[in-house]
Length: 355
Image (cartoon, rainbow, N blue to C red):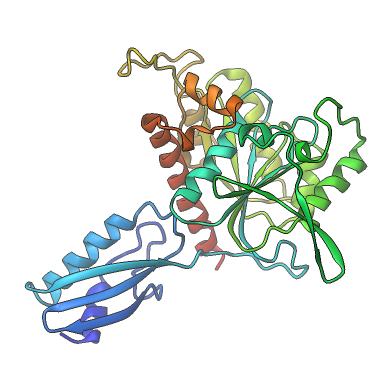
């Protein structure tokens, strides 16, 4: 067996999302051959890659079928998170991908989805941050159990930077960490936009694979400020199945499709899809309607990223500061992991499209 033999065999293995083979994509490195033993490393586009096992099995089969049926194949993985960010202003220069989580209306569980999306991605080893951009109704400091805490300051080149609070391996920043909870934020648009710009330029986010931005509901000043000041990789739209939520979700999708904004919509996720009582785990009750999110995704030709069930433990975890992804509810965690996997695949595809 030679390295050339191995590379030739692996040129028949496609990266499922990007549609090209591993060799063309320069994803194979460190080939070592000792007798019948061969090992190599596949460089993933993200540590959160959900197709890892499929690529491993396909690679082993390719070597055995095309090179040596008696080969003992070891496949290792490393990752170099893909990014299409070209930002002359170097805004958030250490962040590879910026994902905005949006909804057309409030009350659809957007902040819960954003929090658990961040935790799901981090579960597989990616470096993740979470910016709570909902200035009027911040909630991430509650969901992560850091109410009452205050972020520290550090100096960098004569400039003071806010250090985000780290919890469950996620860097979190929210206006709720800077103001008295009993006080309402009564600010006009320019003040809100200024606060958002500070969250971008005056917070020490460091090196991140993904920054999740929990956007406020609707389509307003904050959305424009983020899009105009931050090179957003893509948007994830959150809805629930009922018609009122779907009608507002359409407005969110339309906003990001406008020529002057033109931010890719990675896909749509349906929250509160169905209710499953703890005592009847096999039963699904479609309280708010069925397949509304999936139908909307098809209407706009968008990927449907998944269904998140309506489960009491999700609400309890958010209130207690223990998100469902760090609890012991494995069934609900799987729904979030499947959704996160689909979202990450969408981002990798978007990055490869613009590479």
